[in-house]
Amino acid sequence: MSQALTLARPYARAAHAVARDEGRVDAWSQALGFAAQVAADPRVSGLLLNPELADGDAVALLAPPDAEASFLRFLGLLAQAGRLPLLVAIAGLFEQLRAEDQRVVRATVTSAAMLSPQELDTLRDALKRRFGREVELGTAVDASLIGGAVIDAGDVVIDGSLKGKLARLQTVLAG
Picture (cartoon, rainbow, N blue to C red):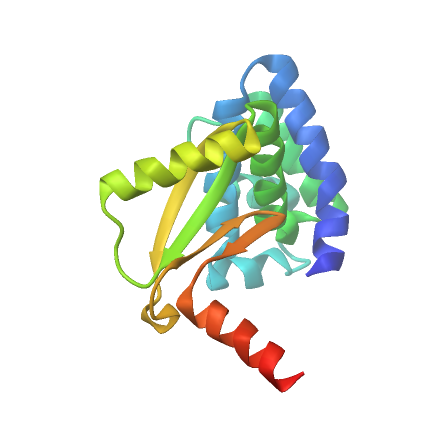
């Protein structure tokens, strides 16, 4: 996976630069999301590796109906370079660049039980203070955490789960 990210990074940066210069970052984000979703389909991903598939056909298959010319050229460039299978990684990296530009931190809160809207608001406010940025929160439930929550904000993971605390206690007692 790290090789895919390494290969995808320059394409994501180039796409982001073009989208930013055009003032169409949101449109590019939607178009890349669409193309990545199509490319991730197992039936399509196998087809993308077929050398018999013409570049124009691949672009037509992956492009959303309302795609702009610059996005179509980008897909064409990926097709010529044999990089269409990297679309999922490119889209993910593009979204990271977009979030950095918009000064938004995307975080996922995994808790033992569903959090109330008030708890999520309190958590969002605390994360805003910590990161000094707007925060987009996603949620997940994992009953194996027993209690508490784990917050994953990219490079920062805060484990406040009971399961995590018990694991740390076990490490201290065993060591």
